[in-house]
Amino acid sequence: MTRLKQPGGYRNEEIFHFSLFFVFSFNLLAQKNNLSLQFSHILFKDLSDTVEKSIPVKIYYSNNWVENLYLNVDAKNDSLESLFSRTLRKSGFYFIITDDNKLVLSKGYRIKTNFSTEYNEHLKRKALRLDTIQYFSIGS
Image 1 (tube, helix red, strand yellow):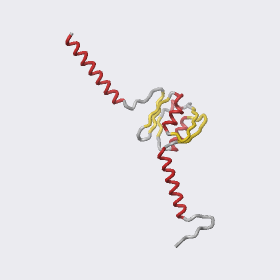
Image 2 (cartoon, one colour):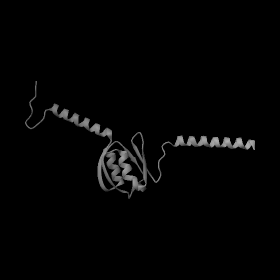
Image 3 (cartoon, one colour):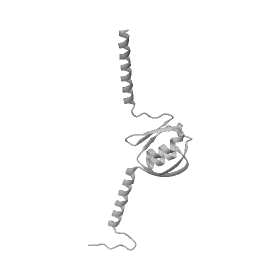
Image 4 (tube, one colour):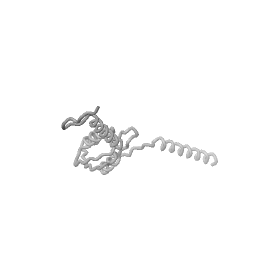
């Protein structure tokens, strides 16, 4: 049994296939998490809201740091990291992006992500120095 096209309309199968194609295409674009945005003199909070609505990311920052932070944004298919690196470069802000899509903003200080490794190396150097001092103290 075949259905006839309604005048000026589409069959349900055609609508379903188009919808499936649209959803699949949208999912592919969303997986890349690239952004194309262009703003002149946008408040950081507004940029943050726009990005959070566009891709699956949560942005953390202090309101005091960004209450008067206006930015110019020109991103063409940029990654989140690239967008924020270029946009915040001159403002004295740093950030990290965690594995679970959280962007954490820092003002004036780089965020150390390998702190435990560096701290353990520091403890080893300190212990070695103490051992060396004790060794030389005994022989003196």
